[in-house]
Image 1: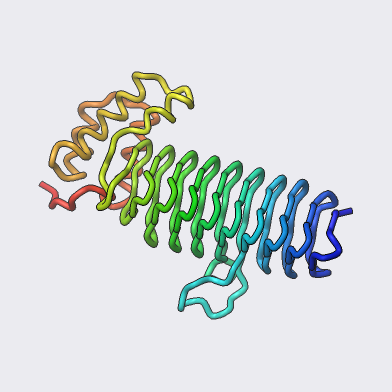
Image 2 (image 1 turned 180 degrees about the vertical axis):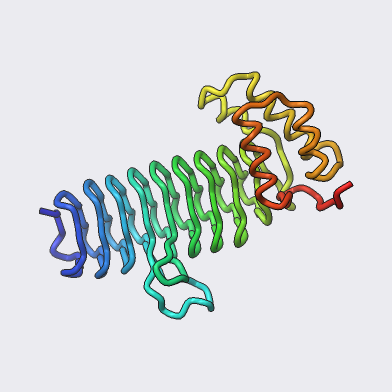
Length: 264
């Protein structure tokens, strides 16, 4: 049976696995499902529409499935879906979808630090780190293994690829392709995320090919369209090269930190 402190509120319709721990003054609403091994700390609120997997820890003052901060939402029933093995720290707010039966999604094995806000319908991948006070707007997608350092801001509908590092305080106002480091305001390409890629056992040759791709994209004063042609000609095929090409092509060539130059 779940271990529920007698000073916590758990709605009788909430579904909690047998070993869930709910501390004093936590609030668990109706229409909530919490999987095995989860720990809900004092003053955390898990509101209607929460679907929480296994072995998650939700710290003091966090609010899961808060009402969307969007004028288009008219009270539709919607959800926040959280995977497994996440740490969600103090005063994090995760808004549910603005669409009927829609969902905001958090993957697995991620660390979301204090005072971070994740807007409606956003998707956070697996093995991500969101630093203190990161702000993610609605309809944002963050790829797997990506780090957003403290106070980073991600604007609505931006897509940040996999294995990206966004440096602290950076304002992301466009799409960020995989394997990159972005810094400064206005946002600027800072290099390849080589340190983390090496930690993931990417070879030096693979990292050099990634760097070569981005030299064409960001350091040749040409359009993304021409940069793609040069990548096809100059960089040997690999899964990483294809991931970069597919990301750029699927986002209409609109990248953060890249001036929008007419195609030649």
